[in-house]
Image (cartoon, rainbow, N blue to C red; front, side, top):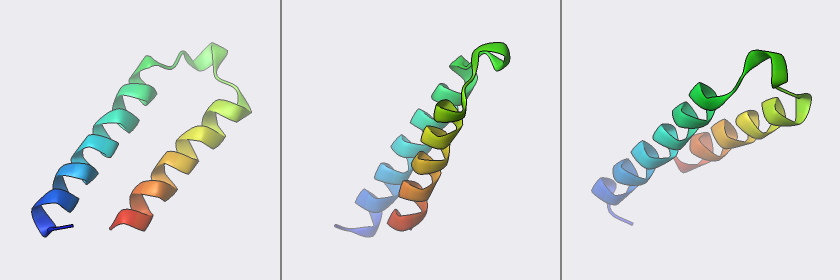
Length: 48
């Protein structure tokens, strides 16, 4: 995977994370939702 492809993939993953975060309702957010967000960040970190 080229550096440009890695950067594009990272942007897509971060955008998905931000969209997921924006769509969450604080009153309805569960521990599982937070765990999923943490997993998304860990996946992004592994790609860097």
